[in-house]
Amino acid sequence: MEFSLTDLSNPTKENGEERVNVLILGSGPAGLSAALYAARADLNPVVLTGMELGGQVSLTYTVENYPGFPEGVGGSEMVELFQKQAERFGARVEFDTATEVDLSQRPFRIQTYNTIYLADTLIITTGATPRHLNVPGEKELTGRGVSYCATCDGWFFKDKELIVVGGGDSALEEGIFLTRYANSVTIVHRRDELRAGPVLEKQARENPKVKFIWNSVVDEILGKEAVEAVRLKNVLDGSEREYPIDGVFIFIGHIPNTQLFEGQLEMDPMGYIQTDKWMRTNVPGVFAAGEAADSRFRQVITSAGMGAAAAIQANHFLSEFESELEAAGEIDS
Ligand SMILES: Cc1cc2nc3c(=O)[nH]c(=O)nc-3n(C[C@H](O)[C@H](O)[C@H](O)COP(=O)(O)OP(=O)(O)OC[C@H]3O[C@@H](n4cnc5c(N)ncnc54)[C@H](O)[C@@H]3O)c2cc1C
Image 1 (cartoon, rainbow, N blue to C red):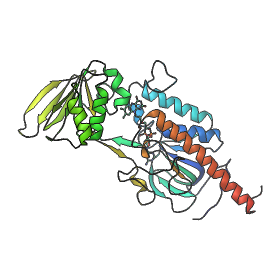
Image 2: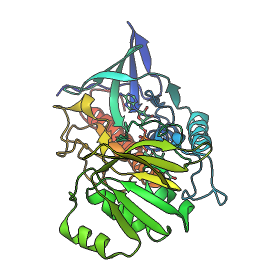
Image 3: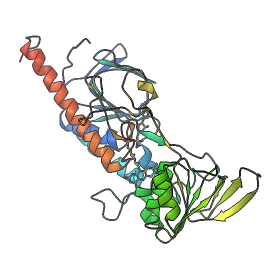
């Protein structure tokens, strides 16, 4: 691997290529927290927003589990505040998306729609996307009764009737969790047997609040201001019926947004980037944080924490590298 050093205080732009100390891919909680920490370390980080400015949380109506907001905070308002805080210290946010990366040598080469970045360190916070049902009403009612996160939204459904879509481990785990709040949780599954492990299945079947509707799919989610019902279709005979409900939790998997790095970074079998506890990937100088590297916690606070940690590590990496060059007499101390 070839190394060279950027003047840390003065990123440069030449021939359509821009040299930066820290490039952050993603503008969700992980990316903007990384930006805040990198900016406060005087690294002039550049954040590429991708197609979803603010990330997943910007889709949600209210966030009630992030400390510091006793009355809750709107999802998009929250990430706007994250962005302002990072910009106050010198982070630059660009409405652009990485389309190609070359991590084989430093500076890393990142092609976007608008430019080419040469980055001394790269922080990947491209998140993950919950799989959607792609049925009418789903998008419109997300945050208004449609949810992909029991930890985030369960509390809003005290004494309500819910359905959970899915038949795997996470559907059952999250469904059982939701019984803490809801009157009933009905698992809607397209087959007549579950994919979840036997222990979880036993727990679900023994829970008096859990019911099952088999061989069925949700064809439409109905409601004006909030979810009122779903249209269920029986996959065996094609019959349809309207099923009144207060909320729909969809747990049919997540897709990490990491395809761009395939073959260059180590990933687990599901495509999550593997890091050590310091957010380092297998390529020195490349860090990953938030849901792109985390299939377990999937929260704003955990993603933000990982983003901050990645930026602290990127700063250490650059300082160590600079000291090595100084010791080798390649730059003036
Ligand atoms: C509807 C909903 C409600 C939620 N509610 C809560 C809640 O109440 N509390 C809570 O703690 N958590 C909640 N979550 C979960 C929370 O939003 C996520 O855990 C968090 O957003 C993950 O942050 P992240 O920065 O890792 O990734 P994301 O938020 O997924 O952000 C990924 C970012 O990467 C960008 N990106 C992707 N590809 C590229 C590319 N090639 N180049 C540049 N950028 C790219 C995207 O545009 C986006 O900006 C909710 C999630 C959803 C979907």
